[in-house]
Length: 67
View 1: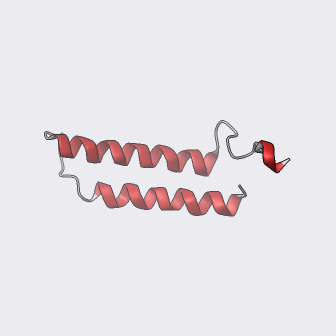
View 2: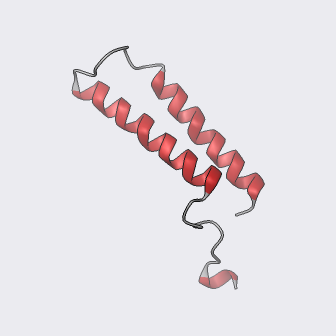
View 3: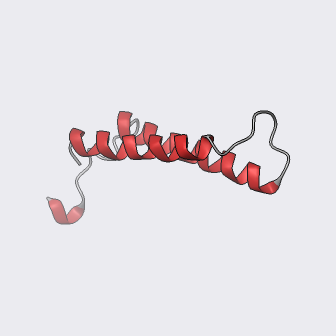
């Protein structure tokens, strides 16, 4: 996956996190739905970081059929 593709996918994950973040109420989540939304925001931001920075060289490795 090249840098341009990683930036596009990372931006999409940030968009998902932002969209879910605007549905959250300010303060500590008190219902299961709010906790689930917060979890989605956290996972989306984690995936954005993985795509933007590639900390474990996940996207730099070649798949066996791409050698």
